[in-house]
Image 1: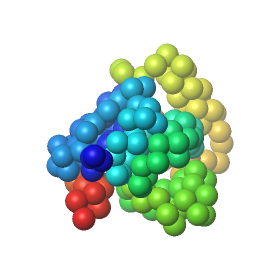
Image 2: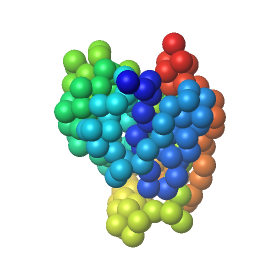
Image 3: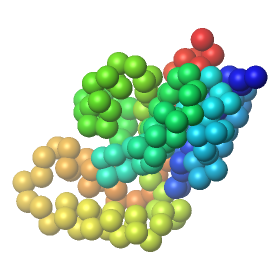
Length: 176
């Protein structure tokens, strides 16, 4: 017997986990941490949702999750990504998807972006170091674009711009 929805999440600072748990609660889907997911587990479900963070312009863990899904024989893959970019930055988000999904995947894989924030207190040392380097680079740069000025302000400290409303489109899709 196949179950309906498996939600696999990879979360570093808690935002992706929060959204995954909300989606699971609302849809009755089973929520599993990425490191516990296997192709065998995925094979028990009709729909597999993979959620992760936007990390250095990429979907963290997506390639491995996609490989597991392909081996599983599960019916459908759905992807959601969390990030510090506000949902209002539609072109930035559209470009992110084009950079991470093939044209075929853009057509076939439902994908959702959910703004979240930054939490330096929960970041790994390596992530903090990377952010510190980015802040230093932006601070030194002269003639910053508006986007670079916004990024410099956004990465100055921790903040939370997550909201239940941002997971609603994913939940609506899964409940269809």
